[in-house]
Length: 254
Image 1 (cartoon, rainbow, N blue to C red):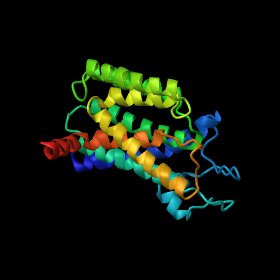
Image 2: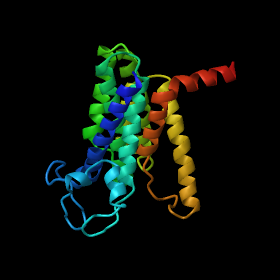
Image 3: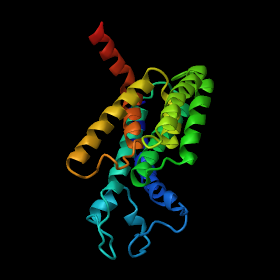
């Protein structure tokens, strides 16, 4: 799509990214994502409209609550920006002409962002996000002509999900069922061979980051490390650049 439409969706992504921050923070605590309205978690100050503008409000406030001056985490504007960039790029690359396909792609990207944030904070991947991701990925394959087709989507989800379910069954300390469900959902959306690219990147980056954290004594070998964020990173890369990576690999080995 054109640059103007992509920019509009990018701005929409910023706004939705602000809401995703609320989801990531509140849902694991069992809190409503609607009531009360956005407020400072330290002093309870309810944010005014001008304090809710994605990214800009953070800059205007210099990263602090306007009432109690408590520091606001940089993660909030960064997640807003990331979601905006994902929406812009996904719209820019959408050459299918299908708005429904674009909406599903945006749902895929934002759901992964939420899962990465929650897993990073809580070491949990909630079923309320992973299972719909799996179902929608499979259904999309049967009703839309772009991406992996229905039976490929279903087969990939069952194949990679089954393999990692066995890994989790034999080695539950290393992988949880939440990771298995997420991997199955990624398989449904990405298909073959993109799912293998996502898994390779996730394993490689996760291992490197884990070793770095252990080297700096931020973690030990016995500490739990969330795998979800690395799966999400691998999935995003495979989603946007999977075909190009496959072409480069084919050129190198041929």
